[in-house]
Image 1 (tube, helix red, strand yellow):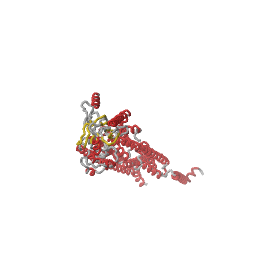
Image 2 (tube, each protein chain N blue to C red; image 1 turned 180 degrees about the vertical axis):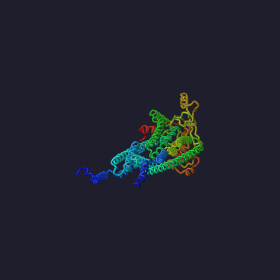
Image 3 (tube, each protein chain N blue to C red; image 1 turned 90 degrees about the vertical axis):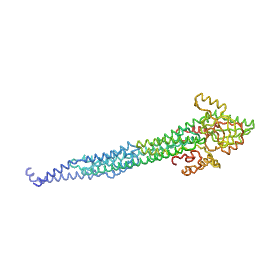
Image 4 (tube, rainbow over the protein chains, first blue to last red; image 1 turned 30 degrees about the vertical axis):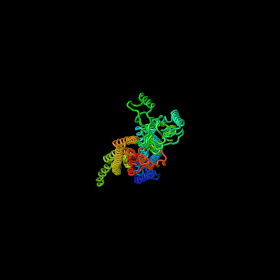
Length: 391
Length: 245
């Protein structure tokens, strides 16, 4: 049988066989990818990735690790696009192997963003905690300073602004803005430290050993005079807020006293609200004073006048300034703070006692303190405290 | 055979139409523009709604890319239409949420600033009326300085408000209401402070100091003797609580 005959007889059978083989080939080609799992969509992986992304977003990673989060978002987007690309293919043509790999990559980046975000947030929070603690410590110390001495308008405003900044920082902390919180707390701390620094500078003379020694000498001389004459003498220790009454060289009474509200300074002129320092005498006893009873002092004495002239000549006090006067030891005190314009105020009961025990001519020595009072302590504490606030 | 020949053109037209399926570009542009316009405010006031809209846009972009990568005759944009509608709805929601959030923040900030302004004005008025004299000079000076600080912070709050930073404005206004520095009373043993029987103003003040260890309601201070120092006269001696408590 020739080939032509064979083909003419078997052509339909051969065609059928060819079609069958093709069908089998196509069937195998279609079934193979399905059988090997290439067409199975990684649905659960996708859900897990999306869930992880949601968790990461909720953790605030976009704020705390923006670069990592951008990478993660881009990777997830790419994975979802690849997923959808395969999803729309005809079943046998789908191949999710690349998608699985993309999802794995995205998952890794999401986890990295989550980790970096958490770490940065914790670091920022720790910084904010430290900054807040330092600011609170500094502000508290400045408030202590404000309690110990009257601050001038500038420093008082600065202290109040520091407190406001601290309150704002706390509000930022509650909002989760740790970086801004740390910055604001830092401003509060700087302001508070400036206030403390200024106050300590003003109070520095109370820790000056030579000056304290001079004050002690003045007190000892007053006590010696009392011992020598057997008379009464009064010693006022400004920073100790104390008035000691000497009799026959011994302290027989001590009274708490309020001073001028700027007593951190020595009195130099009228209106400076400072209690003068020096040796004075009682010039008059006033049983009916505006402030209960009063012992008038001979301020300004010759030494005060000479000092005033010297300061005015050197330009340290204004030309138009005048010498103060009318310095007294009077009643209506005991307020627990310095409030007078330079006088020494005692409780009325103490004033009664002092009034009875003193007379015109009684020496009154007013000194800064004994180096153990509130101002000297302030200077020592400030020197002992480390920079940065926390003690 | 004739019937088949008649159907063929119809099939050809159908295939041609299907092959020419195009994405709903106008709708996509409109939805995307809606999202873009909502973005600026939503990022601050409606972040979760914005995130949902961003996700919807990502899904839409994935769908568009998937369809574009398909053989032209097999492209279908039915799902795209759904995704566009979803994006548009979510963008509009983000815009609405942002507007609501912004309005709320603005209201909160305005209220806080108004409260602080009222308190400040009130405090200044009381300070003007406060008794002036030897015993009150230090307190008055301190209070004026405190008010200056509060005024300055309030001015900052108003600036933030003008700049549209409502959260900052609110925080500043609330901080401006924080209690100013306490009085500069030295620490005296409490028993000493309470052993006073005099009725003079400073004694009344001291009596207050011995008892008022924490901020008292305003009405309690109102019952205090009227000859107190300005600090006590305004709110109480221990704390200058002219801004709330």
